[in-house]
Picture 1 (tube, rainbow, N blue to C red):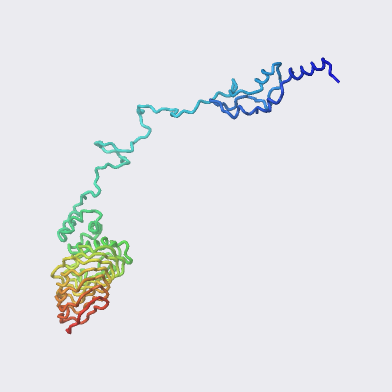
Picture 2: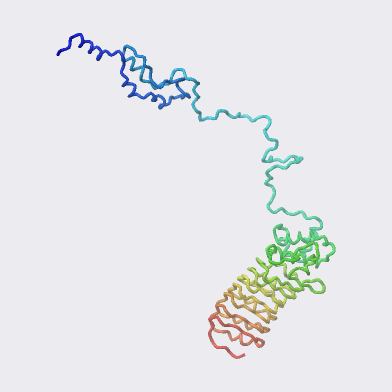
Length: 395
């Protein structure tokens, strides 16, 4: 059957001239697109009350309807709040070029280069650079008098007394702090200064036992009552025995002024050096330095040394100075357990008073010198654990 022209015209009008715009255009273009692309000057919300769905009002013109339904990429003309200014790389506030007339803090941290004529009551935080690291002391009359006395007895210590961090200077300050100083004679002052120098020079703060040492009050004020010290009836030190007490360093030069000392026992410590002044002690007969870390002996010795017994075993000696063989009073010489090498020197025959000689456990090589067998007083000789050769001559 065929349709009437009126019906066909009506159908065509409804197809080609629609009265409502289709909704397909709305669904294909999402409504949230404007929010995904921020404006150059963003606002908090571009529309005061945005609608979730586009307006259903239609116009007769489909083109106009399509333009209304597709949102533009520009924000609304009237935002709810004024846009914020774009961030700036420059600070919002600029400091004034000229400082204020009154500073915010009272004193300046760094002192002025030119001191005022009258110093302020409050010192500056940073000291001036004019002070030296070791300022020259301005001794009091009492301190100056003691320093001159010590320099007179020990000229080689004069410069060290001026160095405030030296053992000699520390010892002098301790003597000056003694409330009984004025009651001592010069010999007593010198002796107390020497043992105090020994304490500071051999790191006395680390000693295992230091009973009485440097006490200025109590029952152990006198140095003759200190641990390891014995004195004669006149109050002069005659024996020092600090074996196995944790002494460290080098024996100080000033020990030579202990003129009455007969025995010096410093074995079993951590000593690394011996000053030649040890052998200049007038009355010293026994030196016991076994089991330390001594690597070498002084190259020069006092020719008039009265040492009779010298114990140097278990150190790290590598050579024997030839002047050691000039000790005419030496009776006992122990050198075992060192690192002595080369051949035995022929000068060993000069030790005419030698009674006991121990050279075992070293690295001696070569033949035994015949001069050794000319020591008529020699009673004991140890030489095993070496690399010696030759014959042993009869005594």
